[in-house]
Image 1: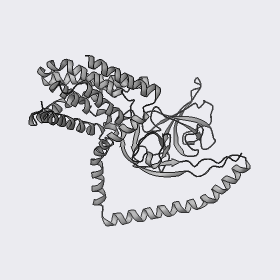
Image 2: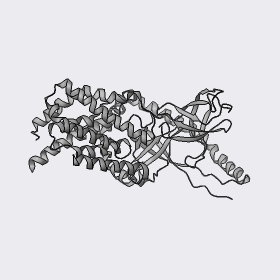
Image 3: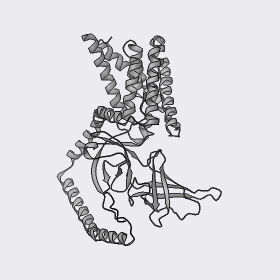
Length: 161
Length: 267
């Protein structure tokens, strides 16, 4: 039981840091370039510990982002559930991919996240599809190696299983 | 697989509930309170930088700043001396015209705690909430003009939508001649689009637009924007008018929440 609690607190801490990074004030010209920290963290934990982190986590995380962003409740939840689902389906393959291949998949996953959010916003009534909406997918893919190594280091150091 | 389907069902249900039936407001309020520490934590670097800046100022700088503020205060107080008599005159004239009397709006200072991280949503998070009397629909102004309105309230914080958000519109009138129009947000911080202005209307770049009070949400008379561009195409029914907001939407740290005193009916 102690082992389990310990694992969850480390994972929870990483998600908290991801939230804070997601909300950190950035100058307007940098705002679209912000990587999707929460999605990156979710993807990592789904690949590393698919039996602990999965769809329910995606749901709750998404709701948190919805509240932070002021979006319709469920918008980001839907997107992150889809991302978690895809990560869980692909985790075995992703584990053996090279770093650049993984980054490519991360780009696609975060791209899907952005796309779903844009569609839902369209339904909500915000009609513009900004040209830069895939920029977060690019920056997330670029930062994937950093996220991977940091979280993997944490996982091994704290022996999270 | 089953879990995924269940999750998707829950999520679709939530979206439908929030979008069509709008009855998740109280849940949002609670959730907002739960996640507010995250905004607080995200603000720490900015606050630290500000703290070092204030403490790095020399005594001379502080004295100078103080003197400047005192002068400014004196000028503002001098200007407002006439306010009392102007207000009384206004009440008398309105009574003569048989209109209901307008009382002065009261303001509450609030501080910006965060900004919505979604670059498409122009929303601010403030540190005053229901316990301070903030309500949904309350107008928000800064020293220069209208900033937006409150869209969500929890017990200690509130979310405001800026006038430049795509989903926001303000009924305005041209200060010079009373021409009425609607100022819609474009999603960009520096520009508003003024809609329903026919090609023959008298409106020019440089005109000040103020709230018209129509629609009941924003009290009349607050500066909203200054017209920057007027494009008249004789083939189109409406002119394309762009305006720049008067308020410093991206630089204001402290905002004012407006409490409109209820109008007394004279009729």
